[in-house]
Every structure is written in structure tokens, then in C-alpha cells.
Length: 311
Length: 309
Image 1 (cartoon, helix red, strand yellow):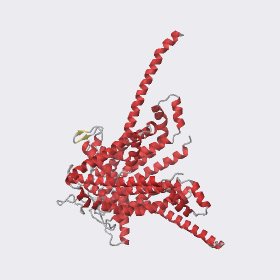
Image 2 (cartoon, one colour; image 1 turned 120 degrees about the vertical axis):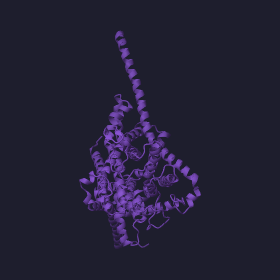
Image 3 (tube, chains in turn yellow, cyan; image 1 turned 90 degrees about the vertical axis):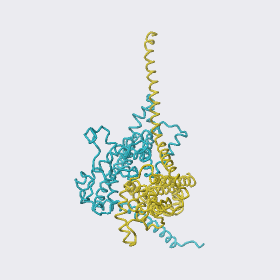
Image 4 (tube, helix red, strand yellow; image 1 turned 180 degrees about the vertical axis):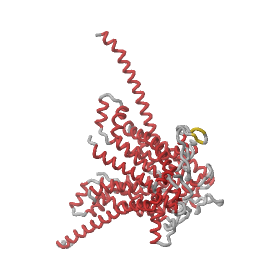
């Protein structure tokens, strides 16, 4: 018996040794997986580092006051002006047009799908919306320039070949699926008992939807609108193709104008030497864009927290 | 207040029902507009581009003459960039999702990573282009190559892959993990032999949707300074080039163009003859993207029907 145990002992310690090795490899694997998760943080750090470091070079030559108040944007001319408001106006006007389409349409579709449609319609409509949201933006740009603009020119004969209006309208169509899908999720999360209560009081479906479900789901709706705004502000190709790329300080959607994003595209298409002031302007413009989207995201999170309802 | 008569009550009810019906009609109309846009787009591209949609279009390089221009370098470029994107984004995204679901403790670091992924999903794609221009093109010296474009798009779709992975893993019931660990498997063995295989369909759906997004992305690739006129293909591995024999990975460093850039180039020319090319190329790109998205939707549908834990 004793001899038998003794002959077993080395084998047991072998196994233990193997187990120890196993623990080491588990640790290594965990470290590798953590490193993969950390890549996303590195990406953010990289974005902030690149934008800020190039912008510092830019603001060493251009004062922030000029950058914010100048009414001309001519960075590549001899008489250079760096008034970012020119590009911001284009971005805001086109985003406003887009949201004027996307928010009402998206909300109506969401209310219809969550409160009125039968499950079969919903099963078909949701994938169709997803397909619409998956169309590449360059194809939407083609759509805006070659299909929507000619149609609009029949209605408004004075509309130029490039305009913020047609780009904005198409951008709105592009954003509808995002708004509709997120809003619908929010409304479906509202408990059935609330609707049953409203129906029991004699409300119609529409009255219940507008006065019970929408207020209850408001934080989710706000989040979807904010996402829509972020998409509109950051959208690039539709504007680069259909809105023209000349800087133009305007609040009129019937005019062509450059936006922050289409300016970056325009510069990148040319051949600017690394380190020149023209090269640095796109990083300053990119930083402005990132700050605008950041503001909207913070607003969105605040809205969510303020209007969150718990059932 | 006077109590309502039966007729008045009927009128109130009828008015309410009429409003319901009107709203339903408006809702269907809005949905129909979305559907109409897809049909109009595809239809217009087919009709306009029909003359160019033949085999030659796929086997010819871009040209200054519209009638002879093709999309050979563009679709090969798109394919190679997608290959790099998938090779980078899938392992990174799955590993990150696995870490966050199976390994991460609830602490500050985990919370920072999670908030960060949510915020990255909202960053405009052109900003990724600026990141790539500063880091990949100049700091790492990759130049305007397929490698740079592939890595840029990989970072762009990383949040999509991570979120899809996490959702797929979260749907796996806890008893699977307990069963595996009860027979002595380590955490990694549980992941390797149970979690990853069971989550695979969900992960695949996310990857396809991510790649469909990446293949249509134009802005970040223009920002890194990709050329728009390319009349050659990247060198095949182990073939002779002007600079001697190409190695296995030579093509990674090659200049390139992709489908969306080719379309942008053709759309922005004043000569209407190029509109035909843009329409034909747009149709090809749409077909690729819609097929990928359709595949993902179908996969998810199958998955929902088949899985019974």
C-alpha cells in the first residue's frame, strides 16, 4: 500500500506542475484579451492626440478669436482668412434640413410600427429600414445630385445645381432608419399596463400613443434624435457630392456651401504637403467637428438622465 | 356640463377612429417613401448604367474616355481592403467582446472601456480618416496603402463587432459555463470550446454588417489621401515587378482605389458621359452592400428560429 502510494506521488506532482502552467497560460490569455479591449481606448486617445497636436500648430499661427469670428474661409489663398463659422453655417443648415425630414418621419414610422402595425408588417418593415440604413453614403450622394436636384429644380427653378437643400433632404432620408429603429425600441419597452390603462379609460390608439407612450419613452426618443444629429453633422459624402464645395457663409438652404466635412474632403483630394498650414487646417476643422458632436452627445446623455422613467 | 347624447358620443368615437385611420395612412406613407427611395435608386442606376453593365466593365481599368473605363482596380482594391479590415477587426473585436463579457470585473477600468466604445460609435467617420492620416500615414509611415485603409476601416467597425459579440455572448445561458467548469475546464477552455462556437452566428452577423458598412465608406479613405486614378493592380505575391520580385505581403503597401472613391470620382466630373459609369459602378456597390446586409438579416432570422437552449 505504502509502496503503491509512493510510486503515485511523482505523477501527482507532475499534474500539479502542469496545472501551474495552465494557470500561467490562462493569465497570458486574459492579458491578451484585455489588450484587445484596450485598443478602443487607444483609438480615442489617438484621435484626441492627433487632432489636438496638429491644432496646436495651427493656433500658433492663427488666433482663436479670428478663427471664431472671421467671416471668410480662404485658407489656401495668399490673403488667407480662417473663419470657421463659414463652414459651421453650412454644416448647421444642412443638418437642420436633414433633421426637419428625419425627426418627423422617423417618429411617425416608429409610432406606427410600435403602436399600430401588426407583427407581420413589422417583421417586413424593420429589415427594409435596415437595408435603407445600409446604403453607402456615396450612393446617396449620387441620388441627391442626379435625381433629387433635377426634381427640385422643376419645383424651384432658381435652385442651383449644387445646394444644401437637396443634400440635406437626402441626408434626412438616410437618417430616418436610425431614428425610427431606436425610437421604436424605446416605445416597445414601455410596459403594456400603461397602454391598457389608457384604453380602459376610453382613449383611442392615437391618443394613447401621443399622450401615454411617447411621454413615457421620451428619454429613448431624445437619444435617437441626438444620434440623428450626430450623423447629420458628421455626414460627408452626400454634401461633398451634392452641396458644392465652395465656402459660403449663408443660412439659406437654397445656396451651395461647404461644410466642415466637405472641406476636409476637398483638401484631402488635393496634394497638400505634410506640415503646411493648409494641412493643419483640416485637423482644426476636425477638432471643431468632434467638439460639436461631443456637445450633442453630452446633451443627449443629460436628456436621457433627466427624462428617464422607471416602471 | 351637459351629459352627451348617444349621437354625440357616437360622433366622438367616430372622430377618434378617423384620426387613428388617418395616422395609420400617414405611417404607411412614410414607410413607403423609404421603400420608394430604395427602388428609385436601384432602378435609376440599372436604367442609366445598363449600357455599361457588362463583363468588360469589370475587367478594364479606369480611363479618361468614359466608354472604355472600367472598375477592375476599384473592385480588387475594395476586396483587398476588406480582407485587411476583416483580419484586423474580427480577432480584435471578438477578443474585446469576450473580455468584457467573460473576464472583466466590474471596476473603473471596465466602465471606462464601455463608455469609450459607446462614444466611438458616435464619432464621425471622417475623424477616423484624420486619425489615420496623422498616425498610420505619417507617424507609422505606412503611406497611402491598402494596409492603412484596411486598418482605418477596422477601427471604424470595431465598435459594431464588439457590440454584436457581446450581445451574442450574453444570450448564452449561464448553465453552459457552469457545466463546462464543473468538469474542470478553465475559463479559456470554456470560452474556446463553448462560448465562441455558440456565439458564432451572432458574431458573424455583426461582422457582415460591419464589413457592409466599411465597403461603402468613402470619407476616411479619401482623407488618408487615396489616389483616384489607378490603372494597375497591386502586385501578386511572388511575381516579378519593376522593383524585383514581390514578397508575400508586398500588396499591402501598394497604392489603391476602392469602389466608393471610383464612384465619387466619376460623379464629380462635369462630363455627363461619366454619369453612366457612376450609375453602373453604384449599382455594383449597392448590389454588394445589399447582399451582405440581406445575408446578415437572414442569418439572424435563422438563428432566432433555430436556437432552443
